[in-house]
Length: 124
Image 1: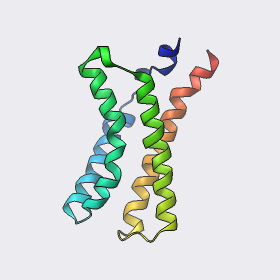
Image 2: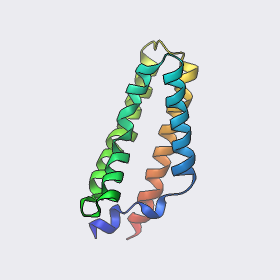
Image 3: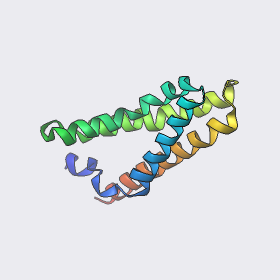
């Protein structure tokens, strides 16, 4: 039952996979090419859930949906909330109008994705 509850594959869509990750890659590339490399490091931790997914995809015996859930919540929700709070409370050396919208958009997308993943689970 726990494995069924944590299975996320049915909730993968074009906007939550390809479009989202291409936009994220574009933001990373922008940071690297425009002297904002330190911001790339701030966001690199967000790839931890992707690493968990890739490990389970490459080695099916290592697939662990609970580990994906934990890293997703820890990085793509809690950590992004922390980054948004830090942007609002600390004067960032990168203009807020460049950094804020992608972070808020990413956090919003991650919250909506998590909601869509968990919503049907409450009915079971």
